[in-house]
Image (tube, rainbow, N blue to C red; front, top):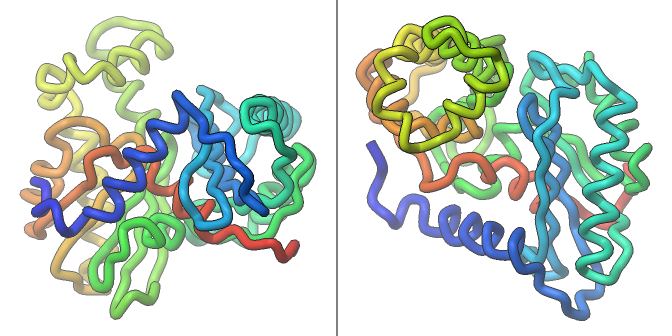
Length: 280
């Protein structure tokens, strides 16, 4: 289910603005630009904001440099981020200096250094590394509830109370697992299955096929919220673009479950909103 428009009003407007500038960047005279770098399992996304934290440009590229929330192709990650940076710099006619990044919750001791080095290796001064659900909430602006970021490889959960993150967790299971199920059910190779999943026309047909995996995601959510009770769940991440996923999660968790119009770009925009001019 989706909430009334007012709940996601800021989020949906920001994402809509970002989608427009991906196609048509806003070339202006901002005194500074802030970039969010989202290293996802399926996509690497760069979101660029101006001095007023308004979207001015963006780019994304399919990539397989991250697996289960960890960077597995360090050189490939640097190359793609550098290429996207250069592409946006050419479109804007400026050098992009400052960037923030994010990583799945609970992995900071394992991978924050790698993420930082990727962003620096691409030519940015990194100003912040935060967890993905916290980044997402800069856009969602949720006070109380669970933010669930279902990405390509993992499901990240953040429990919020009065706008503060009290608890975070991250577990394997995400869009990659959805694609594997489709690959097996339809006798497709993985890449074809992945593309089939991204076509909204196929979602109604795919929902029963993917129900077992969605129920596994739901059980992960239920386990974490049982120890940290919440009244509502908010979904973000590219995998949540699957139509009907929120209804299955709501039924299995017995909690109202909501998602914005386009969950894919919430986290990269939240990362950019947490960028500053102070390098780490």
